[in-house]
Length: 129
Image (cartoon, rainbow, N blue to C red; front, side):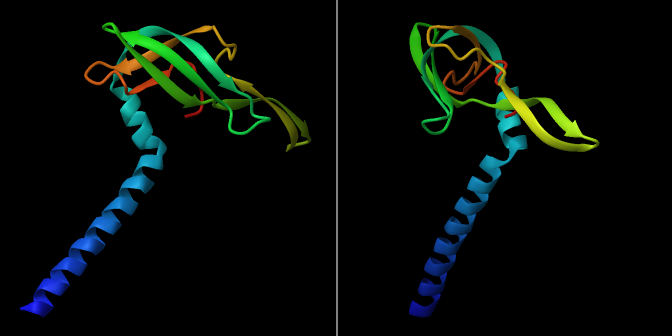
């Protein structure tokens, strides 16, 4: 009986470990993130309260928004798109990147949120995600 219980415990640990790995891989998948965005159908005006410059580290913004009297803070990575690609023949040699949102502290931005869970939200116009 001891061998069976050891086998079941090892099997359960392995199943949990594999499940966690699959979950985190799936969570990084853009299709999964898009499916979360599909549930965000309500819009509210938010305000940028913090901007981290890409020279310091990862470029990100914090946006404060209010839904039904409760305040939420959304931290989001700033996504940029390539614009003005310079080419030599067909080979791209340089490009300029532009953010899809205005990044000044105090600026107002539209935040789309999930009606059932307002903490699930994203910034409208934050391109590329």
